[in-house]
Length: 143
Image (tube, rainbow, N blue to C red):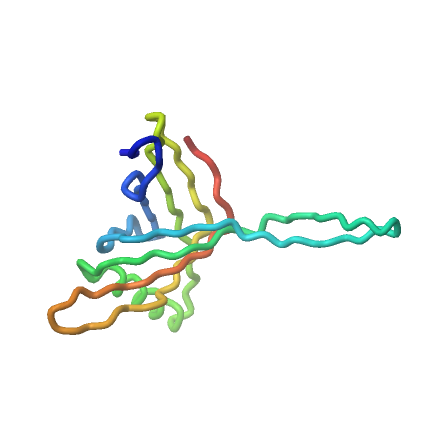
């Protein structure tokens, strides 16, 4: 729920679906996303610089506190599939946001590839923090 008219992190939920079904892994403590663009400067003979922008997908990161083996198993299977010569299928990711005005916004990331950036440090009396990043071909508004 929003606080004092502002969106806060707990207003956001994520659903990730791989080719083999939903990925439900640990506690997501942080999620970042950004639009990637390729921009080009064009300088005319008149001396004026003009800018052109080309959408170039989306990217971002997750911080996760490990609660089960889902991530480790998912990436172990991806690696096994690679060495067996199998084609990697992309994921879809749906971001749902409870807006301050009470409405719901939903965005779907298409053509998502996940990367296991850090499987985590294992130490006594500490949780295992893991890091993922992603790239996506597009993000579309679905609600």
